[in-house]
Length: 327
Image 1: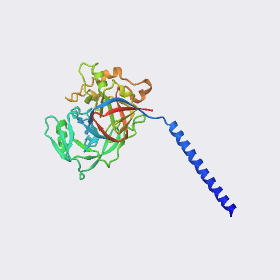
Image 2: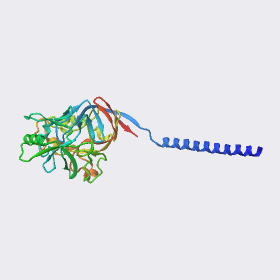
Image 3: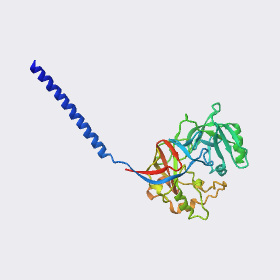
Image 4: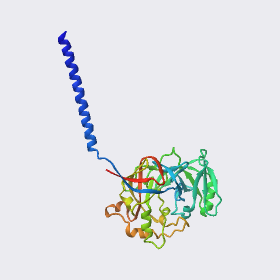
């Protein structure tokens, strides 16, 4: 009997000892994990001075005090960045490159209705949700994507405004529709997030100082609105944003994807709709070219602003501090 008790006690001791050893090894392993994981350092680099949503691709920006930062871009209520698109009757996208006066068209939402405004045009209102309207296939940057047609009255409004013989229609990207990877046809890895009608990525960031630097080299100053950013940052030096690989703004975490290569659309004055095809593009080409090793990516396009993917969604507000994350 005594020997049985001793045996039982010894077995229990062995089991307890083994458990303690395993636990100790686990703690050691956990310690090594955290020792090897480099801690983050958040460095203040600026302040959000403007938040801009562009509901209509190539249309006028809507300045907001706060916005949700979602995987497909900035959102406030029914307004979501680049979620409405003008197309031809056969579904091909129409932008300010073909129709410069699109930059003067304002699309806003109020009480579940879209409000469409343009110079010398009466305001047109129609429901945001039009479930009975057809879903049409659209062609965007050589890729296919869907859109909900916004109706014949909207089509007549756009056709009359643009003053063309061709018929134009408006489509709306809805939440249940499949997005597209930003410019998948490009010969380099694009931002990984899906987008609706945006060209290269869900969030574009630009600093006020970069715009001021460019303006100092021009005969006429330009505003940030000409470059169609979503987040405008103040209290930093010109082009500081080029080095922000990962940033934190409030609860939102953004990961830099690539620089924004600029085309002739920035030569359209956002206040007049006049298309010069010269400045400020020519001046940017003089001092904002890419490295020789990146020419296969950007070719001759000058770089101005940074495109970001959304790592952590949340709320952005004007006045939020921008932190650069160092590892």
